[in-house]
Image 1 (cartoon, rainbow, N blue to C red):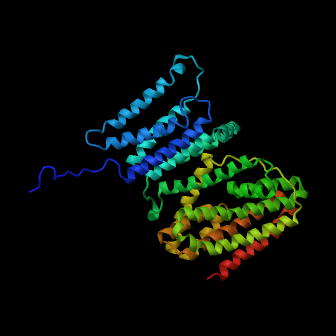
Image 2 (cartoon, rainbow, N blue to C red; image 1 turned 45 degrees about the horizontal axis):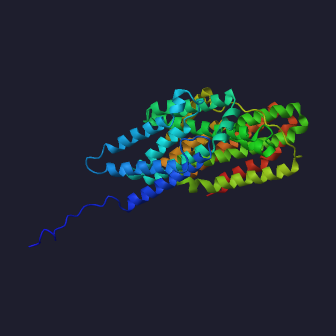
Image 3 (tube, rainbow, N blue to C red; image 1 turned 60 degrees about the horizontal axis):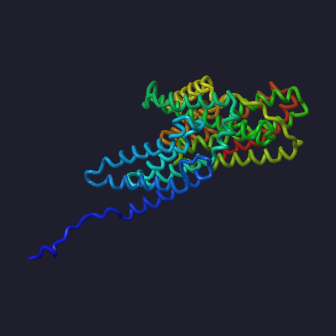
Length: 427
């Protein structure tokens, strides 16, 4: 029989390896954010205060795991708020000029980060902590960026927010209509993707400036809208016939950047099928790049101001693209049922005259779901891209005159022939 001295009661240790790691990370994040705050004029906290706040949050979270101590986390948060108020008494009384509350908000976030390291996912906490440090550090650059934004730029950003954060979440995520293929949520999600690519090109234009140069003008213009770029430079060539070669080169580069859009769209819509899509499309992309390089050497190089692009986040073009995409999806479903692959190719040919994104997204979606073979999908994309080249050549000739038309025909000949060869000979 064991004596009372020999009987022992085992209890779980208050700190284990996971908890020690959480405290160590809390200390590191506090030091990182405190280091940044130390370089500011705010006296509320610096390289010593913020690590203490992070450790305080981690400790209160650790203690709150004990039975009957669940209230401690909230008490710690209230204590932090009280300390911040006490540290700002002069400001509250009006004895000091009113300033921002960045440091105060950062202190509360660091407390919660310390707690989350104990109670939640450490990877998320580290990511959030690093993001806070970066946002604090790049304050001057971010303020300078905001000051450069025009009313048009701000409107573009807000309109994109409407498209992605207000309209998208309320749309039903189920299929409707003939052939049961129209999903409002999926359609608008792809609208947001296309507008997002255009907005990225617009941001690149704002960063690079109007004096972007020939190559960058074509690339950025293609990311925003290759058709709009074609129209703009065709009109320029009509009034400046000596610049016909330069305008044709920009149009070719914009058309080549269409492949970049296609790669992004396929990656988002059908990532598992990307390796099957890439070989023929990359080959055509490479051919276009070679022709662009040779044409750049041939055309007299000069810096040319890129025309101001339109707002890529306007609601009307977004609605038009959404309607076009839905129409292409319906047309593909009908063509597939009644005509097979040949019908899909006809749809690609017709839709490609005005837009390549719709056929790219719709066929990539079908390939991702297994409703269409990958070789049929990429062939439809190539057909649409060739139709788009033909449309751009006609638009350039009509708007830019005969000199530009000759240049465009010469530059488009090899990419167009390569596309036909891939369609004919690729297995």
